[in-house]
Length: 331
Length: 194
Image: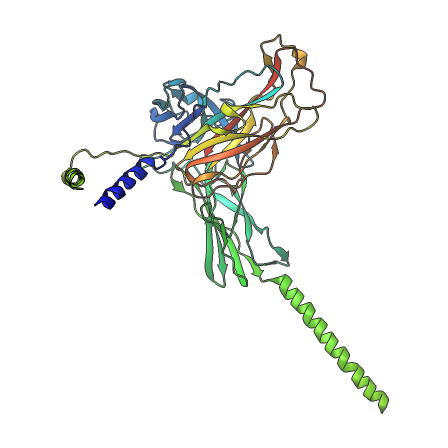
């Protein structure tokens, strides 16, 4: 019984002493969370559309968050923030916010209404909201200081749509592929050769429609007709007429536990990629790249083996040949 | 021994009773359903670690014409979007008059911050999913540049830590400050759901 009581005591004490889950965002410094993180508004008619944002202060200090409207373009697959009304497709003049300066209590949150009065019912309009918490940087007395301001950017798109939720017929969502390159292989006359290991593929995609979209791209590796790896790339945003490149490989990332290579030591492998543009939850027709053939083998080892065999054959032949010569001389 | 038994038995009986009652109550209860939807959300916070507490990276008085040692800005990110996120770094104002402080600012001392700052990211830690691949060291301008490569944006969800190393390369001709003045460069790190 004494043992039982002691055991219970140890169990209770251990439970009380267990480390509590520490919230990594528990910090007195600027910390802002925004939901939703991107907004796509279906514009059915000319009536205003309202959406709500939740802006949360994750900091343990009170915080002031300012919301600014901005425009964006996409350069080298990165959103480039531009001043409001800077683009032809700017949504800025149609957007209104219920508040642009928010005073948030520690760990507090507020809701903000975003209202869009449609500027166009035939073309896509786009812009962004920038949520910036105030950084109270200590003013240095001398020297050089870099003041880092964290911001959250929320892209806002207004997309003409029918009452059934489908894209308006005037919104063309289409694309085509560019070349598919195998970055890790050596190409000789249309066939690529590679050592066993990761096969890196880079595919290029062109937005031929008239609307911004996010490319959803899958790359597939097939060994003798059997798919052994299929990887979905992170979405790549592209504006009309814009080209984006996406790379993917056959190394499988196992959640911080390293990477596992899926490519076999010997293989006759074809690689292809298929993609479609996504907007307002709808997809364009799928387009696919041409297949690329790559032959995987331990070429270096095979080469050394070939050299060794050639050398052995040469040695054997040399040892054999003088004997014949000697015997010929004896005659 | 007998006293201990007298104490423990009723306590255990009480605990078992409470647990059983709670379970029965939860099983029979049909009211009070919490209904909620979860939109895609991201957050960015200045973490407590690194050398830039609160977002201020103090490089002191660096040698001119020589790149400083990196200072690490510690960020905490939360995301529930398995499509991934990117962090873009850029100088918020390329024409910024950077001399500041409790002094009389001499306009001739102002310098443009373009090309003075470099940024190098790292794979995220924490979270569940792909940790991302950091882009190579980049010199900052007013054009946003990704901390991660395009193909290597982190797909992880949950709470993550990101460490961004920042350096300064003050040009050799940087004017000396007046007393009480310093150079302060504004730099933004923007998280965006892909």
